[in-house]
Length: 418
Ligand SMILES: Cc1cc2nc3c(=O)[nH]c(=O)nc-3n(C[C@H](O)[C@H](O)[C@H](O)COP(=O)(O)OP(=O)(O)OC[C@H]3O[C@@H](n4cnc5c(N)ncnc54)[C@H](O)[C@@H]3O)c2cc1C
Image (cartoon, rainbow, N blue to C red; front, side, top):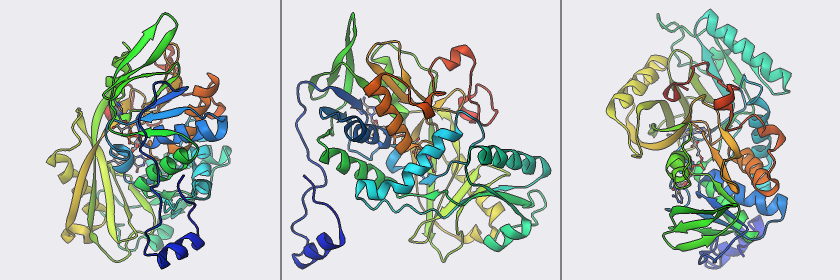
């Protein structure tokens, strides 16, 4: 079992040259059978396994990951957390998640660098201001914090932003102070370590290649490391969801798209919180090392490649410079891409499937990182009890047939537009 991290264990190890640390999680051989199998060792899969063990006392759980944990979107995102949603189906869920983030480091005994530095959505015209007011009011009705800032209040926060840009003057913003950033890969490691210490087997380099069924539902998974039996299987495969679901004969209302992220060279403090540009698709925060971490739209074509194209790089940089002209000579150090599971209404799915014993956690689009703790919490509840958790009740798979969509952006059935 991994040792507990504390000031005393740090001091003790510093005197011993840090030679006494145990591995943060084991590297077990897969057992022939488990009570629960979670496919996908991203943030959602690991959190699900952790809460299955912690909240439901499940002690025979495996997470199967085709690569290494953190190699998917959990280690590729731009680390933003927030609960500033509009739709009734979304606000309670994302607020539950934000509350879990607030106590997560103590719960996991792991430093995930949770920083509630605030998330500010800028508006640039009257109709955007009205939309921000409406969203802020909806948040207040659910007990979520949100403040409308006027132009001068925003200017104090962002003195170097271009307020008088002829096309996109900044008129104000909606600020959620409890939003912020979390170190993304530490979330994967923290959940992995905590789940492992409760007995969960985290099996890396183990790709699920088939899902076996009999007349009563699922019986197990075929993997690159052999067959593993289980009557309860949860899919948490993000960008690869459609591929894995197809192994069970399911066709889902999900498309896989690419999203890129970027990091600049280190700068002096410029952006005190997370900023989203209202006149385009651009958002930025500043890491503790000083690099600007930013991103924009998806690449707009279906793909399973974890890399993007230059047109989007150019577009994102243009928008960044429109907001902060002083960035025009800053050098971009790195960019990368991740595969997004874009649902038809832009909202997620946490539900049973038509195959008994096979459960689905997907459709996170480019907002699933902030959902990680609540997603794990609710998916574990569903797997353990076969009932949806209260705050995830709206995330039904059949809403695409019944028309009860949760279209947060009002973009319609265009997965690339959410
Ligand atoms: C560039 C970028 C920026 C983003 N920014 C944000 C942000 O700021 N805030 C936010 O909330 N969200 C953001 N997101 C979205 C967020 O990262 C994802 O929605 C979320 O991480 C998805 O859940 P996950 O962590 O479980 O996914 P992943 O980490 O992708 O986990 C899925 C895992 O399943 C594994 N897998 C797939 N197929 C199989 C198989 N057959 N067998 C076994 N394992 C399999 C994969 O290898 C992968 O490790 C961003 C995403 C990207 C790419």
